[in-house]
Amino acid sequence: MNDILKPFLRKFVLVFLDDILIYSPTMDLHIAPIKQVLDTMRTHKLYLKPSKCSFAQTNIDYLGHIISAQGVATDPAKGIVAWEDNE
Image (cartoon, rainbow, N blue to C red; front, side):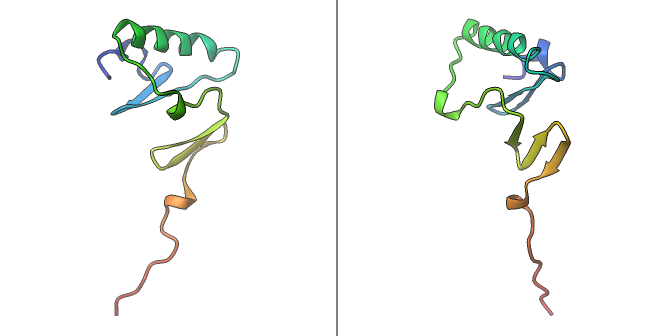
């Protein structure tokens, strides 16, 4: 996947295995990168499962982090809530 999307990596795409994150500063600037990625995937005969896709999100859970306009934070649901002392 990294090879196929290499021209877009760290410009507006992050890839981890089969997870693809397309990002942009505004919704208006978001449409063109989505189209570029989808066209590239179609060219390489790669298909997406619609039920696993989310488009035009202002925040998203990605690899145990919550990414939003405010920045990146650890997902509280994935964090350690209590640490047991084994004394």
